[in-house]
Length: 315
Image (cartoon, rainbow, N blue to C red; front, side):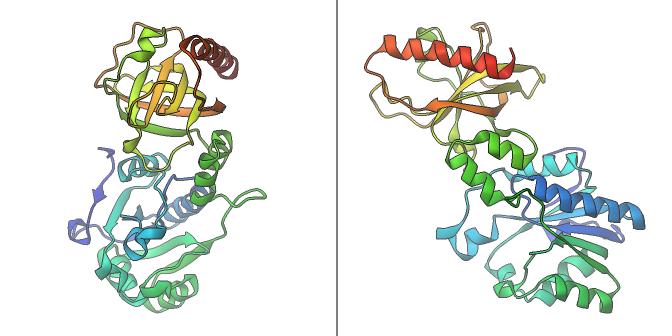
């Protein structure tokens, strides 16, 4: 998590002397453009009343507790979410550990325990469709009504988007079809996977295309199997390289193998990345995953993938 930003993982961790705050609430998974509209409004409100802005989010996702069979795959880890919230200017993050006990809180109990007692709220900003409390019985109208009684203002912000309202569900739908460009439009940035490079079977190196391999277990949601143009960035140095990226298990070669994100840095075979944390950003899909009849056909296609990736990335 960002070392610059106070992060509290329970109500008990909030400093007793925190004082009054402005609060913005949401799952913020992916922190897409719709989230940023709400967060921008919250930042403006915090500046207007001269109070710090605290983002309240949940871990795990409430649906994974209430209806795990319908829980969405997460676009970002809580650590990445905190980093993204720091980038948009919040002053602190409260990560509420969501469980069955919290799910049973009435809307009024949530307001009293979290907003009033723990955070000293003077203004709270949420998306217009925000629901909270047992059986999602609380809404923006209840927040406004309670706020009038308890001395805080409640603001509901309409969701933003083009023909399609920006949402985490929309981003997941784009990724499921390989439309990483559509996902990037909704996110306001390329979709990324972050993880530590592990040693692979070195088959790419033998073919002349050494890759940096990141297990896809580091993230739940992700692009459908295929080959993509994108960027690989070292998290330790910030160096960024153009890359052709394969997602999947490489069906041309027999044998069981875990699904991976494999990045070939264009025209580089001298990089030592084992054990390095990297960020892989997806720009455009080149093709689906194909099982080739032989190595020659695979290598020929990989050369074409690299050529097209270079054109797309302007390298």
